[in-house]
Length: 57
Image (cartoon, rainbow, N blue to C red; front, side, top):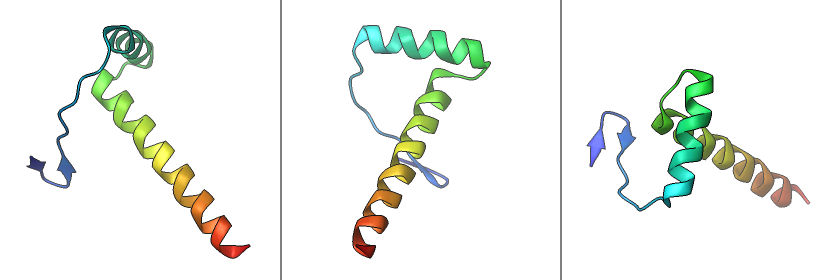
């Protein structure tokens, strides 16, 4: 499902991960969804840079 420039994914997250996300997000004063999105975006950028660096070798 598309929401503006976002795509909504449906997948199961283990209960212990949901709990950890919720606790960490609460400390950062954001939602668990925002925290998960941020982590995915950061990992995507890291991998993209890694691929670009490998192409340069």
